[in-house]
Length: 334
Image (tube, rainbow, N blue to C red):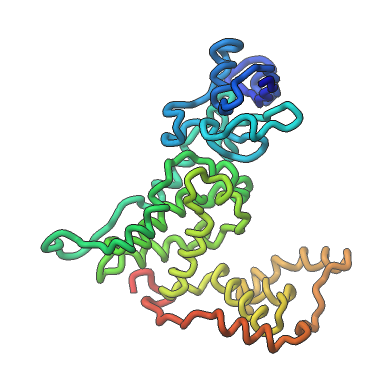
């Protein structure tokens, strides 16, 4: 099978034009069942020894070969070349968000800093257990998909929030955090898990995710980081950590749709930051003026959809029973 591998190359330490990103095409002949990694290794071994990439297990276990293939992150060793050919070309780029070391190799420091920031280990405070800590089979089966993460960085590569805000914890770290907030062995009566949820509810945490679903599509192991982030939002609200913009946004969104059948776009941002939060409301003024000039200002009178009673009945049926808060809104330690 003949194919052209188009590689986005860069050598930041070069003294010539190679220090800036550029594209290089490599026409190759590969087997019909070859992977993208097979093609890249063939190029490196037979055609251009200067091409840099990471790889190790070639079995979708180590995660070393994560890169962007045709614009989306994935494992090169898991991607069969003939399934991603577009007009005879496969486009390969380094993983996004993280700085390029050379060609398809990126610096993972940012990735590991995010992982370390969520304290990725079980915490137990209080008296030592008297025997083995027995955990139910169902609890561990629930966590099995989260623990399948191979730290490849594919989700981080395609995270649209990290592209513009490097302070965001990111999908990999937050999925790792869920592995502990959902583990019955983490915490005790002193509330260690509650402390985790309090920290994760702060800015740059669970409420900064935009639910773009890119991390879910990029993950080669089905960890579904965005789903874990949504689950932690529910955990945080049930724990009483609802005095923040994200939680208020969720409540306002739910209230609007549940009452009228459609989103009240005019009042949603106001309720999200707080009706009495004058500095935040003033920050919205430039956006409001631009919307008015371009005729995109939401109507002041918000109207119900037709047959809104049916919507309300459906909405009421799907609402879970409210859980009693476990901690105070104002204290991370109960």
